[in-house]
Length: 141
Image 1 (cartoon, rainbow, N blue to C red):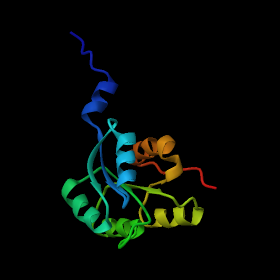
Image 2 (image 1 turned 135 degrees about the vertical axis):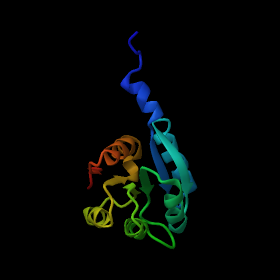
Image 3 (image 1 turned 90 degrees about the vertical axis):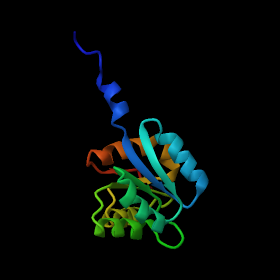
Image 4 (image 1 turned 120 degrees about the vertical axis):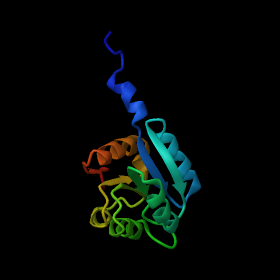
């Protein structure tokens, strides 16, 4: 008898594992609500040092990372993740609507760049593209 399983059924068992890092708890909650249930949010953290530890422990597929955080910026976190050998795709989620900052994010190891004002329209697509190894950048002004 032929299987009735479809590709959309399979996606439910192979959800992208995402680690969220932003110093604002409200933003973390909003990001999680946008990504779930399409993705499995494996952690929500508010600082860079915790992200470094959690990334090694949780082995996410994608890390959604804020750039402007106290202590350690997202750019520094990304660089340290790469130095430590992390293979997680990094998608920056930021208020910085600026091509220069987007370039710095790419240089730090980011494959995705989403401005927070486009969170709802761009983030899930950016995570999907990052998981597939393709870059994504929100339209910048």
